[in-house]
Image 1 (cartoon, helix red, strand yellow):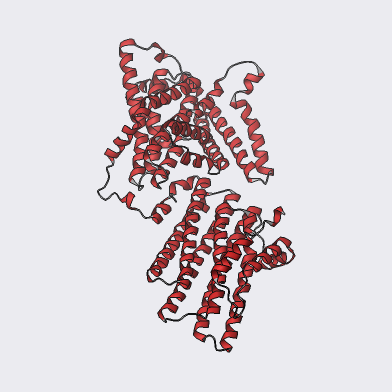
Image 2 (tube, rainbow, N blue to C red):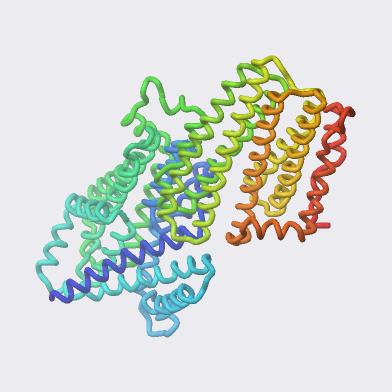
Length: 618
């Protein structure tokens, strides 16, 4: 075998591995986190878990990626260990799909249609289509599909190059002697495990073995132990990912290892014990790429069928290997710690799903922020000394959320290449900042209530009535913002800006009314400063709510170039905006001087008016 043949083989291997990586990356982007979401939810039964694990792995072309994902689910508390075991077993079946795709290259026949079934013949067409889309299309989703096409074409090109390069090895006695050495079950199994552990992909190592079949020197006796070893070697990725994870996450990785190890040992023991007495003649026959795919699938399906009834025992074995601590720290986590743990670093290799998790935790942050503001506003109505510490605790939790989510999004931004995902990351970064600022304003409102309580003073009855209406408007905009952040509805988001403007006008009117009461001697400067502090914080809260709504509208409409001046001009001519503004202006009318309306009556009147109308559907 010449130096050029060796160079060609190494180059083919490089293309093969890169094509597999590109194919998996494209499939993950097209999935956009949905495949991972399916894994997360559809695991209610054993059979369903196995089928979902097999299906998702067949689509993303990597059992290692699926297992690492499952380890992340268990580590973040999203999934139980018992659910993870079923998916891991299914993943071993799904990973055999790659071998079947690669085996298509061995199709024989003189017919044009049969020849076109060979990937080496139709993959150039896929490459042309994919490259054309990547070069000329501006649609991100179409480019992701094109990445899959190009990745598959490169994968098959690498496979073809490797097969052509190793064909001369058939005439090299040294190569034949090496393969003969691997007929030893133990040596062959070790070789398969080591190679797979190095490249961290059983699909890739099986593909390399299929390429070697082109030499005509690979027999069943050589291939069988190597394939068994490949199933063990693929566990390395999951085991490495479990380092530093929770106990259950480490157990999930161990279950993957034990499943493959026990399945391999049982199969090898039974097979070679029977061979000792029967002497399987076919072990000396030459094996082809399709035969390797059959062996790979048959072993993993059989191992799953045999070991599935013992799934609980596999879990217990993993628990015995990594026993519980006396304090059971995983069970004593606070709600905040459990939510933050969902931002598992393993998901960063799957940007689409990592973004889904970041949004989910951000929603928890938003809920905590709203709870903080609601509690602070309640302090103005009825002060509770114990509630003050609760506000401070909630504000600290919001700050922790903002810090953890912010760092996670920063790391995610460095991993993603999708323009759409980049926009969503930017929007989330802005939103969590605004939610954190709202929590700070809630703290300020709580301190104002505390100041009134400690000085044993309060506003005039008129100011109290006005503040109640104002507080109700703030609660409304907070509730709407939380809903908009959750459902990302553009029509709902469009209703927040007019309410924010009405709230600003209400704040100005309240301050004007205070000055008039001050001139009449009905209020004091000190109380006026406290009232101004409250209205200022309320206005800032409304402003941050409007910011969040605007970010989401820009993201949905893919328009990130709206400046504040342009926005103001657009509002002036936007009939829908003006109609919503009139609605809120009528809904939140400050009580007239010396004609205060009881709050209960005011609230009843508001319920009669109903929600803001959807102008777009009228």
